[in-house]
Length: 228
Image (cartoon, rainbow, N blue to C red):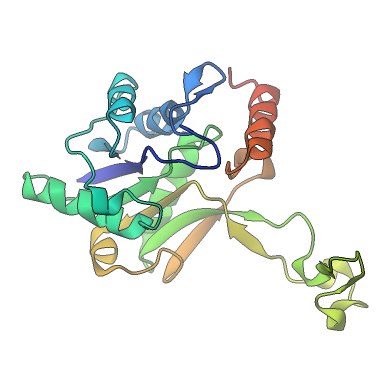
């Protein structure tokens, strides 16, 4: 079975109720659910939450909420790994063992179904435990600057000061959208950043929404892309 798990607790601090706040007229979590449904590859799409309102909205958007997340996995310090492990074990105990599991974060309005399909295809090629999307840093990380409280600025890596930009190795960062993984890797607690392959997204395809500024940028991109 291929399983999608969307972890969506109710206690978002920086953007209150972020996971169900309206984004372009739709509850935020609806975009993650919609992209998962559009792929056509999942046997079950499950939301793991501790919040009754999130559970109700998730069901309205087309996901299942077959259990409520326990309190010990719903606090500010609970990580993604134990939440996914709990979902895997809860469904297996109910007669639904998964072979491949995709953790999809709930605040991903720019997520494309094709990215989920492409990552699954790479996972099925073998040679890795996980596949997740990355973005290339827009500027060379070797040219990073360090700035102190007084505004004085210096090169973080002065050894690269005279190297041409085109000769520097490109660097990437986690897009923060999803992780496809093999169930045994999730159960073992292996980090998704270890033994992984990645797909590269275009810069317009992901915004990590943690602050009001991030939210505004995501809305601007969403509208510019005509996703309404």
